[in-house]
Image 1 (spheres, rainbow over the protein chains, first blue to last red):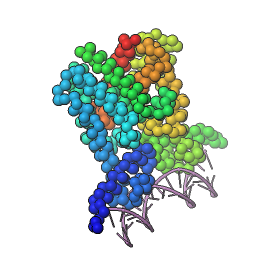
Image 2: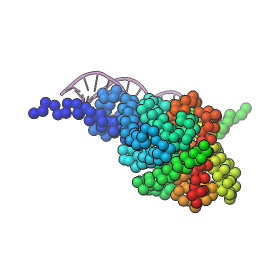
Image 3: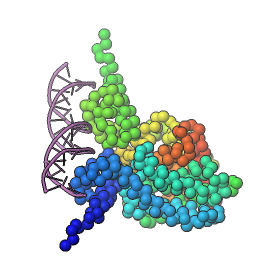
Image 4: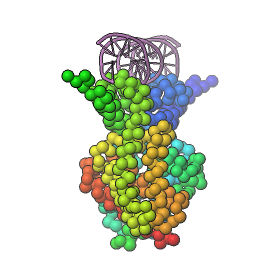
Length: 220
Length: 220
DNA sequence: GTCTATAAACAGATAGAC
DNA sequence: GTCTATCTGTTTATAGAC
């Protein structure tokens, strides 16, 4: 004898289903390559509900970005806080390696990243509303804190252009294996990039990070 | 009293104009985000000419890929042949640095790369007909030869998984500055990535390449 | 809130004039 | 070869029933 089944639970469930379906489809086919009918169909609702819940297709895009921003922070934050507030050079170096490994494993094998990674990469490549959200909520704060770690690990001055750029090269090394996944699979003769392949990649990146830190340190 | 103005020159000129416009628009807005009317408009012709010359929108996409494949080979080939047929470790290492610098400069500052870079990145990210063209004509042969250089420079066995993966990390370091250009500009406080900024980036990448090679060498 | 039905604009492809 | 005009299907957004 319940008056209503799920007074506001249903509303939230529809919203969540739409965001999940949109993230999957935007990631796989791009924003312009995906119709709101397709999204609504996969979410088990009607196309008009997108306008109702998010104001339109663009609103749904922004909602996807905010969801992703929250999830990415949740993955990376713990690794950063692990390092403690004022780490010594060795701890900083080890944290950087861990961070690279966590990021690589997340992007390459975690099933939830299967569609959010391409969505992110598409959106970050072009300057739009989503980029601003990502810069403010995830990329900006993360990059800043990683740079601090980098400076401690190498003994460079904090906030130097050099350490900032080097941190970007570290990120680039990781992301390429997702962006160029098809190329990598082809050239490596891999059927897929699973856990074993991701471990091999992670080891290579960790070795590079160690080499770059060691070279910077000895240059001081 | 010429019978025809430019018997086959006009036809070729229309084709070229369509490819140039398509590359610019596909790069900027994506394939699905660009209409054939828009392409034809920018090329100074009509929308029907795309079906006539390329069989349809997809044919134009493939034609763009082939044009880009030729241009990229033209940029990278000279650097590779400079190294000679059987280089010593030092020459190989120097060639790798040059190659990275050439690639970075091309991607970051050459105006012709302004639109072909995003086009390439979009297409390489998804497995389609364009990826196959790129793999066969550019990426495959290039990556193979760079891996050989890498093996010589580090003293590793040629065609090892390790050297192949490390070469990918080198490429990733370069590409990120194009993919994440907006992020880089924001975090570095740069108005744009011009010649001076590209030089700073190139120097950072070259330093990393040297560090990784040195570490691999001493590990032997 | 959720849905159906529809409006208004736009897509790519093509027929036929010149 | 180049163009205009049009065909057919699809897009997003929205009005209105329930």
